[in-house]
Image (cartoon, rainbow, N blue to C red; front, top):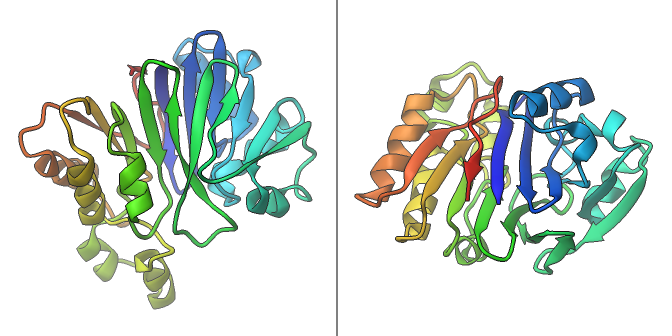
Length: 251
């Protein structure tokens, strides 16, 4: 299995996964044109995609459906589909259920319930029969369910949205700060580091910190806390940025 975060932040989030002859996009938070360009930059082709899997209905995860939703089947929870089906012309809709494994040709994935201010949001554990990865962003609290399903992954894409002090002293309104800090908001660097510590094991080879706030975080802060949490584990830590894809990782 190969994975690339095409970009991650409040202006768009999308993750490309390929296994065998199957190519799937987990979230499509950029325009169709941007997604095509970002895929091209890593040697992939938009026309080879098999499906799009959506975590929740916020714009930074679904913007590309305006174009791509007419061409590709869209997988999402019933709650997410109910929130987006009237906003886009969709080629086909497939309902996924938290806790139930799904298959798209050579890729299997498990939707994992998350605590976020959306309509039935999920993260994903993804496998191809020989390796396993997870993509967990947009959550305000790490539950036992999340920790359980991430305990044996080889690669984890984990939200590390904000530095608590930068958020506290930053330009956002009090109401927005409270939303971000809430159990239905976004993980801080420290919360993300605690999750990384909880799932660290010898088989965890790569941690990718994602969905960083451009106003309330710095890449070096997010990376530093994640590295400290690994405490000698041989895992590598990579920061996912908003404006460019990460390198392609073989899981």
